[in-house]
Amino acid sequence: MVVDFWGKINKQHLSSLYLLYGTESFLLNETYERIIRIVLSEEEREFNLSIYDCEETPVEAAIEDAETLPFFGEKRVVLIKNPYFLTAEKGKEKIEHNLKKIEAYIASPSPFSVVIFAGLYEKLDERKKLTKLLLNNAEVFVASSLNENELREWMRERLQNHGVVMDEEAMETLLQLAGTNVMSLANELDKLALFVGQGGTVTKETVEILVSRTLEQNVFALVEKVIQRDMADALRVFYDLLELNEEPIKILALLASQFRLLYQVKDLAAKGYGQQHIASLLKVHPFRVKLAMSQASLFSEQELMRMIHDIAEADYQMKSGGMDKRLIIELLLIKWGKERK
Image 1 (cartoon, rainbow, N blue to C red):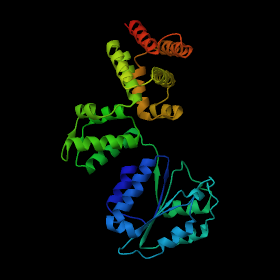
Image 2: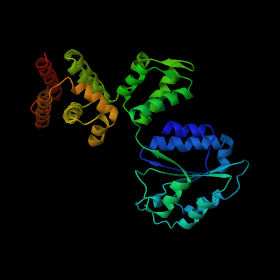
Image 3: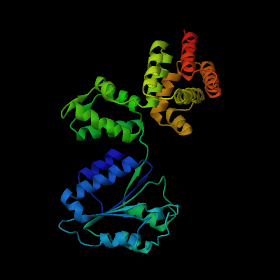
Image 4: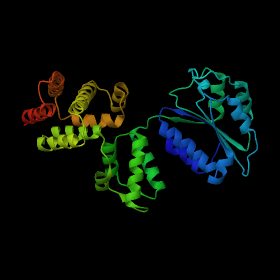
């Protein structure tokens, strides 16, 4: 788990070798930056931090650097990016790498260097000798999408670093408004922490005032108003989106996506699939499935199919140019309001 891995780094339980890979670029970057911050002071970074890109430079240059004594400090950090030779991928450039040099280094790493291999790869090729060596001898961190519990723990840890706490209701509201992208969440958490100040508590009200809503989250709010049969507020959300210069056709496309998700989640849940399994099948975050399950429970499958059909009809009207696009969505929302009374 990401917080446990970072905890070891923060306690200075450091390794000579790290292997960081995965598809979450923010977590990957945050992890190697934490290692660098713990090992080197700001003054030492200039002399004892070296960064190499394996798509531009032979890896043996990085290894030679790792074997060089640090300058004005006790430790040296060598960050090796894009080690594509650990995967089944081919490098963008024809760079010859002396992989035997890395194998020898892994067998006997320098006591005064921390070497970090970091790449945005979904998986490594574990059939390769070098990959196996690193997996067996390095501290390994996989920067993958966080589940809901991991997200909450990561959020608490980030706020704790600011000397701030957040109650559970506020955390739930933040996830609903900002989504589950860790980079977006990090920006929102830093903003909230700055607002309440050290020793402060982030509440639901603070989140609702300060957090920027994405277009997707505004459409989610619009769907919520439809579910609650509050068409006046649904129209208000729609008009707010128009004020933000959002295109009606884009809003309609997101409505289609959301109601399609509700239908799929309802259908799969009825077949006995759990939240995690549904998320995996639909390739969406489990938190989105959790919210969709709650919303879908208030519709019958027939209602959802009818609404999807209505959206398809509205899409056809928009693209055929027969009616004002804004009016098409207004009429659609009014129709749904009448049907759900």
